[in-house]
Length: 462
Image (tube, rainbow, N blue to C red; front, side, top):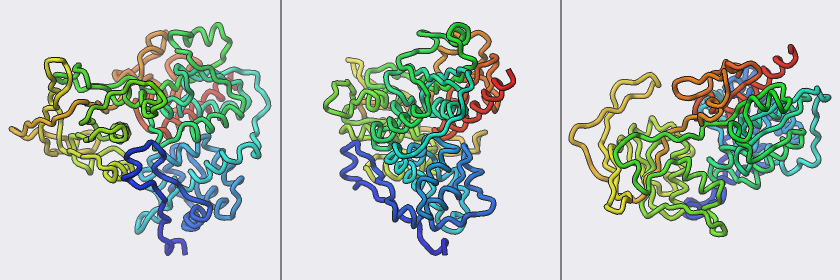
């Protein structure tokens, strides 16, 4: 029966309308739609979807509970493994994880696991006051978490449930890390979703301190030696932008995607009630092909610019989510594939006027498994623009490593940590983008949960 029902489509804002506003693109399922989609699940004996989820979410179990109309049970099953279902349901790359492993996807369309999770997560936020939170008796042990992004929140949630006294230190004036400064409002509403998910973590007893820069305001050493914390988890993300190192990158009008998105998201530059300076010009070129590039180019479009993606491989190799690319195309974003910038050109006043590019062709696969781009001789051309946004990935900020003795990093500036999250310094654990470099929300959460287990084991033995 399940195979016969087509995947339930999800309602979305009209592309022409949404390209001019910052309201959420995707409306999500209602109860009837969510239950109909849930009825497609085959409830496999060896669920491949669970194995493919970085936090091991018990997917067939929560889907079955929803199908039976037991929404609070569905929410409780998700809560065993994830503290941020409304966020994950919106921003996880499901097509390469749970849905990519779904048996139904072999011959047809996978179950819309992400959209169902989002529905249950949103239902839980609406009914939060009625639902119980259970935490273990207090252990009398204190753990400090550095960073309130997905890795920190996942680690904090698990430790609080197990009876630890947890304090999260956040460098910025708002909680959420990349969830608030990196991901645009039209993909992830900040007040309606992120703030309420964090409030749920707070209900577990987690304390939050904002405007605390670890490495400046306090150090890892002072947390352990003077403030009485028994262990520290570093989930400080990767906020240091990368550039290409080409001529003209210092011209006015060249910015990192990180700065551009932080101004727009965290500092409300998209909202006319805020006086945040953000320069978009008339023609924006975004260099890169990942999710951050899509977020930046779609934000630029909404701020009134004609916006173009420039990517050195073909569309097949785009690392961004299929859904994001599809939405960007619907919104009128231009895509220049197999194109690579070699210089940024400017006028006498020092402002960007164009990007000099070369055309590329694909050669043999490199170590990432993607085919390496090779320059086509004599293919140089100029792409006129007044803003260039570099979305080429990020590295961790070196501040924490440089102010903490015995904390090793690798050549990319990422903290060295075991699979379980133990660093080279006793009592200090790390996970998420601070260890891997820029990755996904769900991988960061998975790392936070693994580290919570390792911290629990470390403190139980101590």
